[in-house]
Image (cartoon, rainbow, N blue to C red):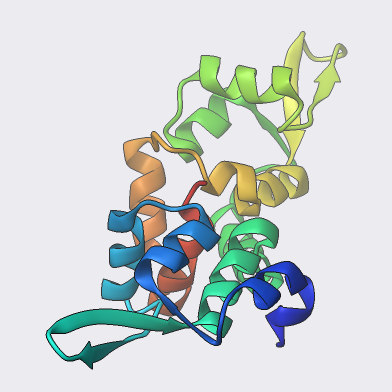
Length: 181
């Protein structure tokens, strides 16, 4: 995919190779985060030696790819996540309570209720059984696979364990999905 078409201003402002400092500016990340991306093999850099000066350069295309994934997400990742959570939630009923969501995700009921209050997690209120909030399984899977849930900074222990259970290729790709601006 050609990411240059999405960022013509950046392409006009930078050459085809950018320094690590320029990559930080383009991505809006700190130096340590860009270094982590390089260590995790998500950004490939080359060492340039100019006399006594040594510095790393990164292809602008790779920086734009990271920028695109951070801003728009990757539909392939979301479809893989949806499949992962469908398999994980097979044994659950079609309507899931906040209590069950708490068990699944490891977050407190108050946190889940704040997701509901803010409109990130959609619910169905069932008055016939009792005054409980229920979430259709498909809606929960969409939420768990979405950008908001996967960019939570302070993840629960269960959330971290679930991320580690992703298939290894998906886990690597999710590192990008998890990074926050």
